[in-house]
Length: 310
Image 1: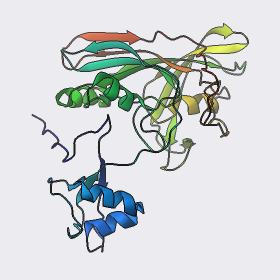
Image 2 (image 1 turned 90 degrees about the horizontal axis):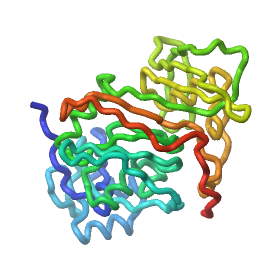
Image 3 (image 1 turned 120 degrees about the horizontal axis):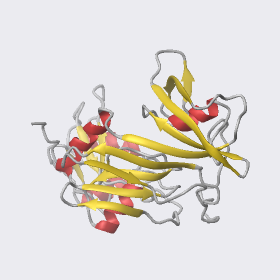
Image 4 (image 1 turned 135 degrees about the horizontal axis):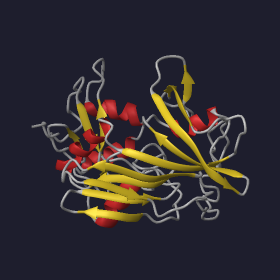
């Protein structure tokens, strides 16, 4: 039986878990607080958390100003949320199976799947934790912030591993649809396979030489108003795989601000959604053993929601 990950020393607060910060092995700081002050630069915030006991080591020890630095150790503390532009969209629930702990939603565009960087509260995970009062919600897989459609999550920690292992073993079959230009030079359907890498801190993924790690089948379903309506079947799950593959073929997804070239978009502009839809997923449920399939209630073109203000 797989070992269960120990519970963090600080519980989730308002839908968001505490930050987990690893202390470098080669660190020379005298105390944990000295490390955190250098790492965060937030003297007032660290002092505030110390005063109320909101900085803890992994074993639950409450950190004070004299707590010695522990090379390779982990410290937990609550973070201050970044200022975020509210995303004026709702998350539609397709299925909430309390018997298996499976939650299926129809994700709108402009909401990231889970907290990262500048997107924390305005994410599917944090919104649903707050709305449903279920602090253990985590995604089974991810969709890009700009991609719409079917997204699987779990609501209980004890079933999380089973669903994630199912995905890692290739058991989640996914079908996407996209609007993009047409091209007479492409002989469709086709299967594109190459090697994709995405370095941390870079906006775009890229194709490089080497053994393929990304494969997508591309089919043209028809034409709509001069645009191609495509069905995309990914056989792998690399970051930005579908968007990069269509751009590589010379038919970038409509509304894509990253491929083939990066263009600036105001964070409050929700008027031009990416025309990429996770239309259907199917799998054998690892908890119940049943064959399951879920389809998005959305349709292309994905409709924008106007222009907000930052």
